[in-house]
Length: 64
Image 1 (spheres, rainbow, N blue to C red):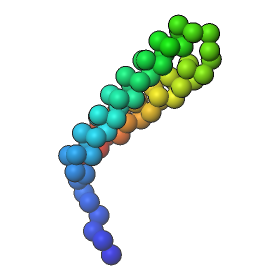
Image 2 (tube, rainbow, N blue to C red; image 1 turned 90 degrees about the horizontal axis):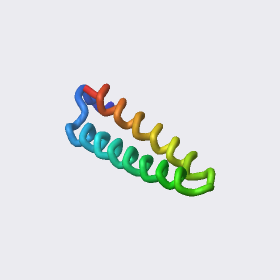
Image 3 (cartoon, helix red, strand yellow; image 1 turned 30 degrees about the vertical axis):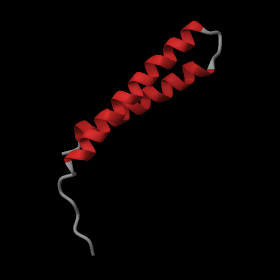
């Protein structure tokens, strides 16, 4: 039976921070696109990307 890892690798935390930054940047771009057009789907996509950014940031901060 494999041993349980007590501390995650530092690269996991860094990867989650990079993913959070990428999702947040893309969400901001989609929000700008939603504001500048009359389409509804960029707003939904921006909200989903913002939620993904928050999730990645929370996972990176709670990872010990």
